[in-house]
Image 1 (cartoon, rainbow, N blue to C red):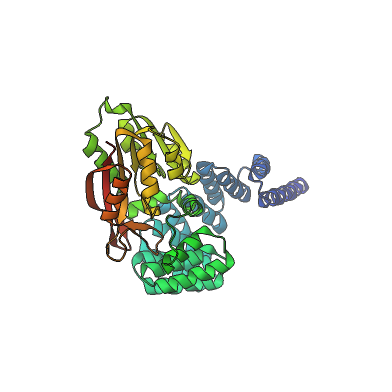
Image 2 (cartoon, rainbow, N blue to C red):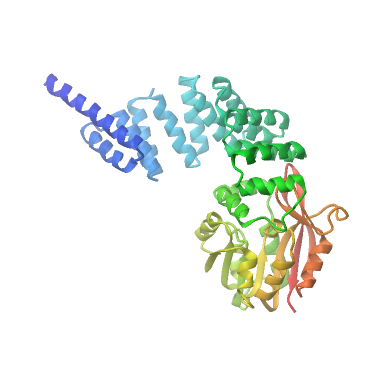
Length: 444
């Protein structure tokens, strides 16, 4: 009997090594089949439970992953790698308080585990425990001074806390360690822009340009920081690149900035049309630059048909999940409107025209797409120094602002009448209010 058990143990070890090898090849589904076979023989095999949990997480079964890894820890409470991966799964599920406890337990068992300190920082930051998060990141880079992502994470939380000097130092360390990482350039340049250190930011963008000369984000921000050869609007490639990258975190980030453009546009629509009723549900409405669809629930009560158009496929995928739209279109706004003569009773554009400098073409296209008696509702960022930039200004952060006089002139040239125009605060940025204009215009 002893000889048989020894043979079975060797067989299970070999089976586990095979399963792990398959798993490392990027085949979690096949690996899971191997782990299942092991667990049929030994249901309490801690490694098989652990790695099966990791595979299930990769396959999208997050609750199953937590259950399996927890079972591994019941069998082997001191299994540090399993507990760290439990924290990773909990973090990905948004269970940040649970993940925090898992990572703290890992650190208690292995204080020199730099990655666990970093991961603890991530979930602490997600809970707005910024001081504790900064301490966790500092510990991570103390233990692993060449851990570039740890330095960038430290910079991010320090910037959010308002400690820009230490943040800039952390970002520079991250960039020195990872000179091919675009996030390092992006983070450092943005922090410099937030401090009005535009020449230094331009230098960082120039360095980034050397390793990625065709990047539309780099080109746009170089133009913004230089203030010369300013494009009349952000390029399609710039908008797609920025917002595809931003799609998954867009709403969480904006919520923290007290983002108000969709709600303000909704208020303007209600002011122009009154509270929605069955008669108003006869309108054909376009959400022009719909993003993730934040305006959708506000416009749906007025719409017989609600469409959205946006350049970012990533943002449109998020908008589709809401279910408010009859149809969504991936297209550049001016071109889309130009091909839809008299198609809509109302156009709403929340925080989209800040990526346009010159407004004449898009206003003409909007006027042509709106039926007589229809409305255009939109926001723009407001230029504070009209004398310096009487039409529009491209700021180093990459967005345009417009003067009230120019907005009125562009609308008038397109044959649209201003019904209401309000000076508003669109959001907070770097702890300062962003001034904007909220406009309601009508086609006679």
